[in-house]
Length: 162
Image 1: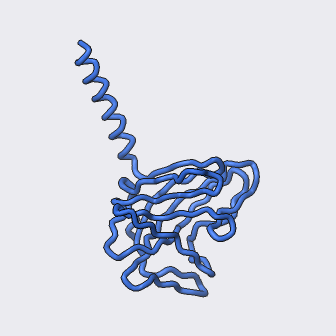
Image 2 (image 1 turned 180 degrees about the vertical axis):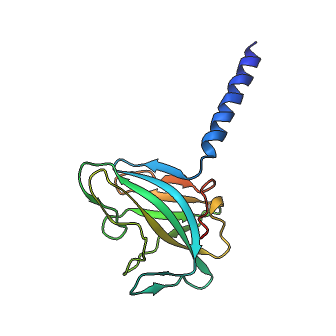
Image 3 (image 1 turned 120 degrees about the vertical axis):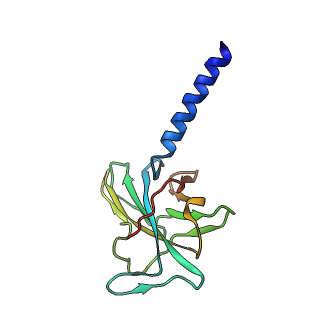
């Protein structure tokens, strides 16, 4: 009887894990930020009306669309340069690729300023080697207020093919 109960419990547990893992996207929280990965795509350049940026030879831009929420009751900035928050891609072999900073931000780029409890969405550009399969690695969000990295799997994240 105990074996049957354990088998039923194990079956239910696996069903829940599979269902929650197949929803697409990934999300996580720090003390002051919540982040959700919405989709990704590749781009061979990034640009605004003033500047065009191209990745280094042998690399392409992995463009990750995220929604970022300020969980505090105060305005705050998400900035890699001035605040120290980062978003990276970590490949299966452990190589870490940092998000790109642009002097002139491309159209659709993730905004930096957030009002209290505001959610905003946008793109983050990360140079990765050509041929990278994003679903085999993870996006890692490091909020300056959180001692641990928030690891977001791209395994079930949809590719935005326009």
